Length: 406
Image (tube, rainbow, N blue to C red; front, side, top):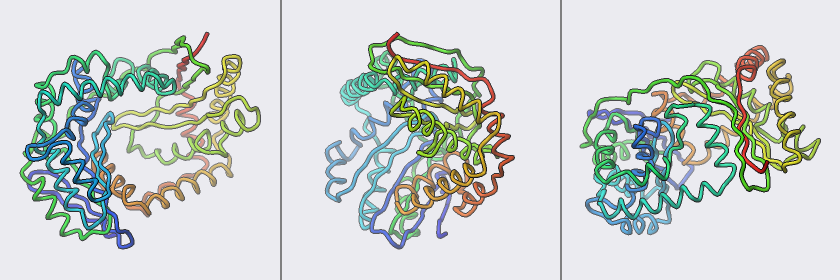
């Protein structure tokens, strides 16, 4: 690979992956601060700030930023997670400098005007209300609250309507000044660009960011909460079943990837085949894993009409128990391994995926794992490894959250 990773004097990390066969470039800024790092009364600050940074800078209005991107035929966006906030811009490769300059300005010199805080507050409240109208979003949020009970990992990154209403302009400006420091930031670039030129552009745009106090101090979550069944006027009962899992960089992470895929990660998985294909009980059923720096969780989601929900819940439990007791078969191991490696390789054709690979790894585990090494980690998983992980993870304590009528 031709990836380049450098660290500036102020602590900011730059990663560039030149791609000879594309005319696009994806530029991402990964800030190592997320919703788990917020004080309870400031819940939603990371997400609020993410919105505000696009409202304008010392030199550009929000419209100026939009026009600069539209003029190139590109797009610019951002998202907030529990452990980081990411900003990204995709443009034709000839306009890479424009993307770096724009992101440098919004990260380093945002306006954060009082009037913008008030107008964006209303936008965020509408976003939260929109999410409340989506039952599968609500049940997953409820599941997270129980999975990481009384811990910031269990809070939704958007905060609540109450905390968003209470946040002040001073709160947001202080949050930005405290947490958006150079050593917490990774600038990742992938596309048809020259690495040296990109590193020079990033240094000019971000080189004057101050160095801060290092990574945020985080406390590991304690125990899980309890089962929760919430009555609501929906057409279906929405179910999430799950338990605790592995942290992000655990040595068994790839074995868990394989076990998860065999359980409910694809169209050939046990859950999909048994509950949808064979019995026609649901339209959607799948499993997933979430990993963080010091904790993780697994979950199974399904939605069914009320008169079928009890049977769906029993069959989910049965398939989870069966996986815990015996692990995947040899065929399931081969299928899961082939899927994970194939999907990973296909994703490398896209500049955005390659940018996200660099930014994600550097901002979470602090290094770039080579493509060959990642593939080898999946290839090294044995049936015994998969069975052991299935027993340890799916055989542990679990909880169920349900949302729907009766």
